[in-house]
Amino acid sequence: MTMTAKPLMARRNGPLAGRARVPGDKSISIRALILGALTVGETRIEGLLEGEDVINTAQTLRALGADLQRTGERQWRVRGVGVGGFAEPRTTLDFGNSGTGCRLMLGAVAGCPVTATFDGDASLRTRPMRRILDPLERMGARTLASTDGRLPLTLAGARDPIPIEFKSSVPSAQLKSAALLAGLAAPGETVVIEAEATRDHTEKMLAHFGAQVRVKLEGPHGRRVTLTGQPELAPAPIVVPADPSSAAFPLIAALIVPGSDVLLDGVMMNPLRTGLITTLGEMGASIEQLDARKEGGEDVADLRVRAGALRAVEVPAERAPSMIDEYPVLAMAAAFAEGTTVMRGLKELRVKESDRLAATAALLRANGITVEIDGDDLIVHGKGRAAGGGTVVTHMDHRVAMAAMVLGLASDKPVQIDDGTFIATSFPGFVELMRTLKADLS
Ligand code: S3P
Image (tube, rainbow, N blue to C red; front, side, top):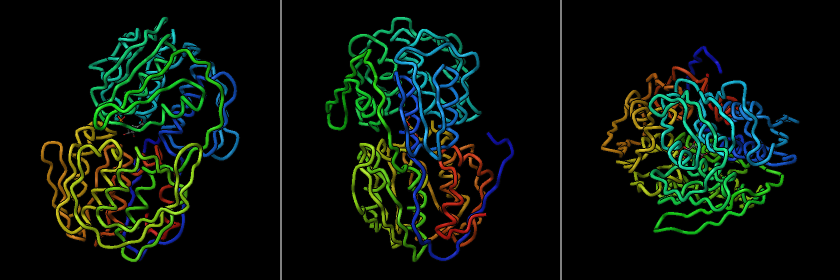
């Protein structure tokens, strides 16, 4: 992790043009390493995101006895220890900035008879872990030390994990995944019920490795996921598609910088991740999905994005889980739309890498846009342009940093951020990729 802040500035510089492929999906990359480590045999991964969040997770898996090797660019090989087979780590597991790595690993460790200390950077140390610990404790894990359910914390995994039926109190794929990963080591069926469907990469990948997973619809927007415990996970190759949450940045930049025409290759189109595409469609954005196909079991497409006028919309709360990481950058598009965009039900944004509801509002205000926060709703008064000229505090949050840079590419005056180092947690090469599309970032 870099300790010195790296300010960055974005300025307007003619249309964006060209073709690019954003790095591999972060959610899938982290899951591929973890499930590979819980499998007996060798798992080969192609297209892995080599961002800090993923690399930190890899490091923790090594500390738990798995063998992970980088065999080429974005190519990794994982030799696992089998379900329940982690060894007691001799060092603290340091997840850096990664909430996903930390929470999924809490689940994976909870099903093994080892004790481990989990820690992270100043941002991760503020984030709630109690929600994860609750089901894990019901399954037999014990929290030995933690202040207020936050990191650093020490978890003693269960010697004989108990399968549970768990009704998730918040729409969180991390929470669901932690319970399922702990359930791998439990005999019988572990059931997770979510009132709103969240990304399903854990369920899909478990099935890909040979576990028995049943998914049923539950209520109007929910799912009931049942995992049969103690499977023999068998190695299976993984191909990681391009991350739609990373693609969102060049995509929205291309929509709001006049005259732009950009092609983004191989973007994952998993329906539980495409809320942003739906919303931008309602805003009148020109996004063509070309060559729709399957890659590594996921829907992918090349996206051709052309700039044009956007209209304000109301984004319903029930769409939030399918675009939870995209609100900061959607708010930039909303500033460039004509009229008032209302994004409803954003409570979970307050507990991301930063309080993203507050950080996004502050970002826009610093650049001359009128914004309100009303309860859990974000309201942006779009004028089809932004003054810019602001310096944005990014609070160790990669997505706030990149959203600010997108705004600066289209605003009247340049936009600056205090620190661009955290961009490397999810999108290494962001600046270089944006420059190949003719963006002016310095
Ligand atoms: C993720 C789930 C989401 C998301 C995060 C990645 C995952 O978090 O914000 O970036 O890979 O499961 P929550 O599950 O807490 O909503």
